[in-house]
Length: 404
Image (cartoon, rainbow, N blue to C red; front, side):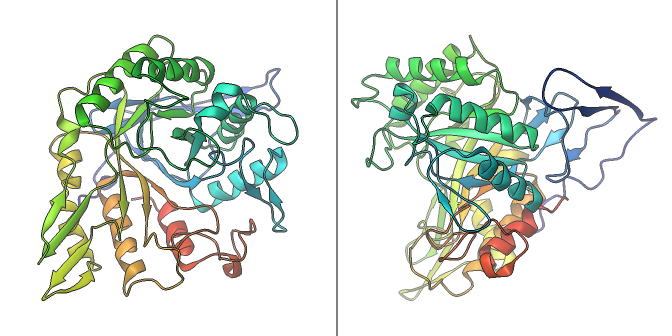
């Protein structure tokens, strides 16, 4: 089973007129804007330099920029803001920062870009936003998030801003309202209008309403529609919706499947909506059970079989729905030992997503858990030193820099 190569076969028709405009303004940098008038669309590689980053919108199954180009988002998860108001960062010496230090943040983003990423996804804690909690340097949280998005744009990165938790030490909340911070669905809508009013001015930010929602489908989709309508009054940025945790597939003794059928629910309405799911190899999925034993799918063909059963290919190619795999990674256990063929399985999965032109975000720009991109002892920002990069990190870097 070979996925369609979306990059192949796209021919440029007619003449290409390129207008190069040198722009100098009162902002802190000069940039070159290249406007290409093309008679057909093409994919933007997830590497290289972007002078001015374009706003994004949805057309059918595609994420598009304002110049008619298909944009495949490929990036990494940067945690920290769900724990500290200034985020969590390390520099090239391994020094740890739980405050917003611009030079360190910029260097991390530059390294992400050098790996080939054109996107990063960040979590946030509701209380930090509501109370504008300062970091240890006294910088207010909203200013920190705004400055992060600005720096990302300067470095050619889009930012997926995703709400994750309510309060300090509370961990992930799968229920976005009915809490002290967000008592009602109407309060959730108001929160997002507040966020969109402040951050919607940035062309490189996408809004993910909540991470891994486990409310009833009816309640959640009703809340999503109310939020979309309200946010559209202040901002046009892409809104990302996820329901449940992830997709999964089991074959054999404990056969079962969780699919993307929910993206066709007629209760989800509105423009510039991007659907999301998560894919972890051990999350009940990618498994083959035989005679009471278990093994994982790891060949290209078998992983493809699982993805087809989960309706990943059908989502984009038949239903014409835009899809973003918001989290992707190997075993989520905290142990060193990985399942046999663990990384081969995840490597082949990324190849399938690349072939179908599906956007994705890889876990985890840090040292924690088995899906970490850096070694357990250190994640110094040395992007070319294998002493600090896990095998999974090397696989990730290869796929982020690929362009098909």
